Amino acid sequence: MIINFRMKYYILTALIAFIISSCRNPDSTAENKRKDQPSSQTKGKFYSVDKASFILSLPEEFAPKVIDSINSSPIHNEYCLLATKYKLSVIETKGNWSKVKVVAPDWLTKTYIGWIHTKSLTEYHEQVYKPSEPKSINSNKPLIKTQFDESDILKVKISNAIKDVNRGDDISSVDLTSLKGINTALSIFKIYAQLVSDGNASSDKEILILAKQLKNKCIASQLKNFPKIRRAYYKLTKDQLWELDIDVTISGKSNSILIFTGGYFAANANIKQTQEALHGMLDSLRFKQTQYRWYKGQEEYTYYIIKSNSDSVLID
Image 1 (cartoon, helix red, strand yellow):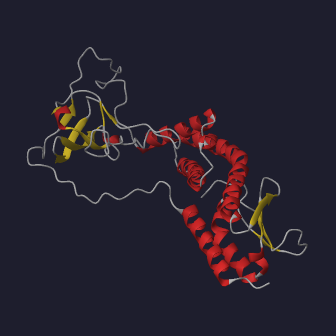
Image 2 (cartoon, helix red, strand yellow; image 1 turned 45 degrees about the vertical axis):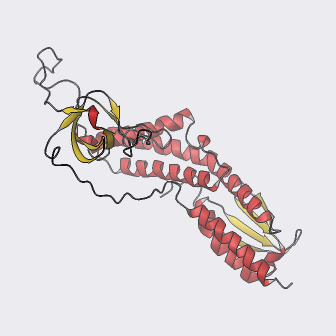
Image 3 (cartoon, one colour; image 1 turned 30 degrees about the vertical axis):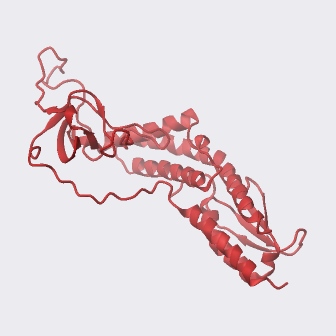
């Protein structure tokens, strides 16, 4: 069967567009290239806020709040909220707005950076602990821990991830009706896996226990959700290729086999090009096999074995 060149062109174009959208990072944002320029009036001075205030991402009244990446989890966002006791430096001013950075507590310095109303700033005064405050028996320091190291931050992140899975709010809350949603689901699993890896590299016994708990919960979640994600990808692929007279079906244990049927696949070159274009995404979704037929009921067909990881293996 001779494949019309124009038909081949349209199919390849559709496939390429589909793959590009599959691989696009849903979380990418435009890079802010503006350099911070502190004013002469604020340089070298420190401030606090007169009341608790959220940090904004832009010097605008309704700008998005800055996400607290330390206390947020893959599903639930916490936002950078300045307390009146925080020590701030001003790194830029614009109109009635000031871009601030938390100086103390020092564990917030890398994340608590953004914009607030300049009128909210007040001169910072070092806090002196009063005798009436609770203190430990052998120290003048308060009982409450005010300094956090990397281990403390990792504990919070792993604990939050465990809470997400326990609530059933991990992948089950992601909309899988779009490629963006599918990529988001994979990104969440990847975040969990990275947390497990970071936890296993720690010498802290508590972190090691938390990492093991998260790993077990993540494996259970992947075993439950990867088949659902593959089925969602099949539906999207089927809808995309239907108008090009290519039928897509799914079969196999845990939705692991994807089957393409259409006259376009009478040519081996077209089969090869399609498989090469889709391989990366199919491997990421843990498909095990693809089959290509140029008509339904064809007994002899071309198939590819995909050596992907099992659903129980964490994403590296």
